[in-house]
Amino acid sequence: MSTPRVRINHFIKAPQLRVITADGENLGVISLEQAFREAQTRGCDLIEISPNATPPVAKIMDYGKFQYDEKKKQKTAKAGTHNATLKNIQVKIGTGDHDLELKAKKASEWLKEGHRVKIDLFLVGRSKYMDMNFLKERMDRVFKLITIDYKVASAPQKSLKGLTAIIEKK
Image: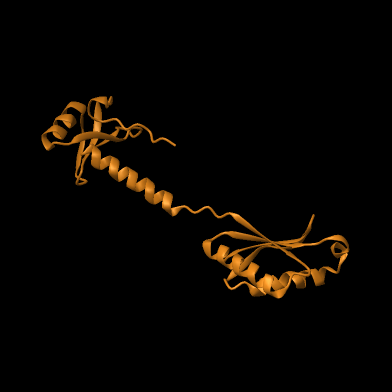
């Protein structure tokens, strides 16, 4: 993803500009020539910040500092985003307590990281036709072992391979 090109100094086309200094002082709407002269007297560049405004907004500051500030803004914005993915845990009816504890521990870690966790109670053969309350009770065994506070995003439902529930952090 490339950033749009910023016009500086002689590349600015607008006849009138709203000019702001590096300190934030507003010089008002002035002609391009006058703004360029003002930038030269201060030993800085004239940078077009908002080309779509009427009149366009330009800032008098060092172009290198401007680029540094823009990259810093992009980096902090990128750091603030977090992609929550759907993690999956598969359990069978006969899964032992120790294995359930390990899977619940992993689910707790994923919830702590902000991910959603899909818990599948995998049913094979005749177990697909067992009593629904019994199957939900088996699913609840996993829920009880999860240490992080969570909410059930999707209650246990019948799926092709068994019973599926989705949980996420509160």
